[in-house]
Length: 328
Image (cartoon, rainbow, N blue to C red):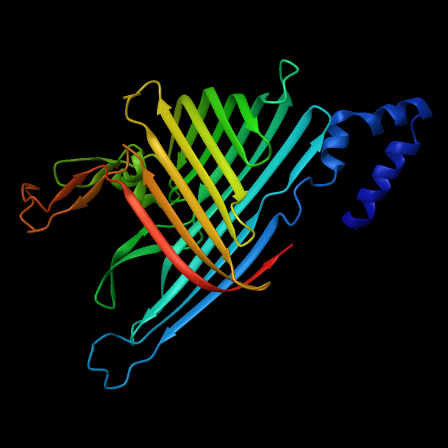
């Protein structure tokens, strides 16, 4: 019913007004922006990559394994006069099976943004810019010892989840490079799992406990920050068979250690082999001063061993994949 009512509503909107009003509406820049054709061809990519290793009396050692990795990217750009609307969805998910162990995930990411640019100063390079973006994952993450899960999930969908807004100026060089300077920016961190919120995971305020360890006040499941952002985007076909998509996001919290910059770096390199087969390298770097990594190497509770970790750390992930890919 909604699919029928919506086009009827649009038809009424353009015929129910006097002619000059409907013409004004049709020519309105926002309407033209939303209804315009995408300016970048083939903005979408779906890729599925599978690998398997089987060993039998193999003297060099190793372990049977199977993995599957999926990638979905969609980033259309709409242009109309002095306006530009950029949308982006970047999703990756992968599973791996080692020997007889159950399947476990090895990559999990969901990122989406929407950005509106309005030309400034009658310049082809500078734009007023407003961007909103969202980042989380699809499934729970666990700590493994051998083939067994230890403890409860240490992450999940919306644990964490990040929602960010940025208002500022954008400098563009064509459709392949832009840098956004946003002195007004907000960042919301959300933790849906209460046991993670109670632990103070991902920078939220931890639960208050009594001397016996009982929770008096549950941990907060959200945290809001105000600061500034710099966002760099680069997407270009380097050659006919190599394409690079890079995204760098730097955020400074004005109210809490502004010199400690949160960093998000995503790089995807696509190597076109044939029309429907590609190889890809996906790398991610994350640093957040509020995310504490703990590892007590010698289990003494002191964190004095050189291999101990108790503080913020640079997180890194790199995946190489080969398989089927389709552009649309």
